Image (cartoon, rainbow, N blue to C red; front, side):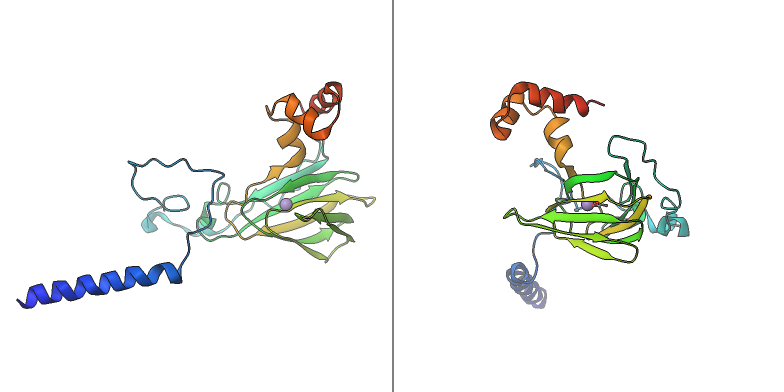
Amino acid sequence: MVASLLLHLLCCLTVFWLLLLPSLSADPDPLQDFCVANLSGSLSVNGFPCKPASEVTSDDFFFDGFMEEGNTTNRFASSLTPANVLTFPGLNTLGIAMNRVDIAPGGINPPHSHPRASEVGVVIEGKLLVGFVTTNNVFYSKVLTAGHMFIVPRGLVHFQLNVGEGKALAFTAFNSHLPGAAVVPLNLFASSIPNEVLTTTLQVDADVIDTIRSKFKS
Ligand code: GLV
Ligand code: MN
């Protein structure tokens, strides 16, 4: 009798909490571009599974990948060294990541957006034109030197152009352990998006698209 009363009470409390939960919490932000559901799969978390605590060492919480200057001998004369969950597994589920950004004179970190994070950055060396464009196509920008910070609201297209005489160095940080980056020129011209989509969208002839595509062949 007592046992059945307790069970009843427990059920009521559980239902009460389940009813309360939706008003107190929200779905976690997605950490992948898409997730086609496997309806027969088991419940998962929005991150990688965890290493057993007994195998965690101090090394899991430190990262030396920012000590070296990035290689800027490439088409954009820039280099991004990411410290995200893929390169620094200790960040898993913590909702933070950083990049080291090296840009040679005249180089650019080309227009791109981070679908899963806002960005904050600080210039350490050099002179950078930093800008972003809103969803209303309003452009905000400023030329920054050492010590200046900038922010880029989540998902907005932005860039950094080295407008100084020497190399530029900046560090950026994100509120995601895997912010992702959609690089506009590569999305458009290095993907298999049909030419007709580009000629129609950009209102140019096919040879213009061919010329631009040829610049992004790896
Ligand atoms: C800069 O825009 C970065 O993504 O690190
Ligand atoms: Mn960025």
